[in-house]
Amino acid sequence: MSDSPAIALIEFSSIAAGTFAADAMVKEASVQILRIGTIQPGRFLVLIGGMTAEVELAHRAGIRAGTPQILDDVFLPDAHSDVVKGISGGRLAKASDAMLTLETSNSTAMVRAADAVAKGALVSLMELRLGDGLGGKGLARFVGLRSDAEAASQVARDALAGRDVQLCESIVSRIDDDLAERLADSSRFDGEKR
Image 1: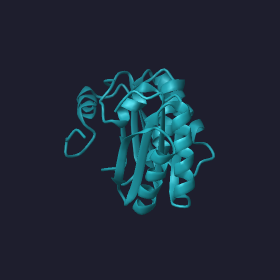
Image 2: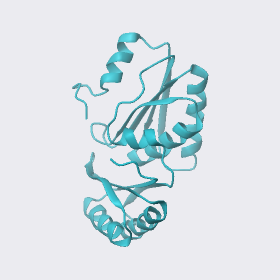
Image 3: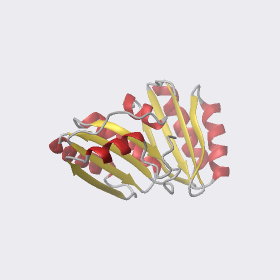
Image 4: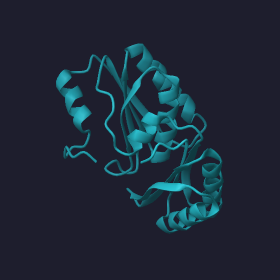
């Protein structure tokens, strides 16, 4: 995934509608499709990146073409670089004093929350997962001092306030070294890194 100044992600309840909207998006503006495809349970994600004005135009075209099958969407004109790396599956920071785990009921909401936390709290992104292996949910883990993890939790709640999304969260202080090592390697039960 390239380092794009802007990204937009749209989550569709219909694969057909998502495919149609993705075509409208790339025809509307000069953007790069960073990732596209199905996630559980039968949803379709389209992630684009590029220059801010172009991404905004393409995002609007996707909204027009995909409504009413859109579950959620996010346009980030200045996405945090750790979020962009995390979306591509990169493993980032190792566990430290405290670990904040965030879980959202859809993938797009997690991108919104993770970007807000990465920009608004003194924590480091450890992991970001979207959809597959999660039943369509989003998962993010952040590490830092306990007080900073608490502040990050509030930033995530604020970022999702007023949206039709569920957010579950936990903070583990002084995480066990073996647990931290295993989660830093992979949070999948099968241990695969994807």
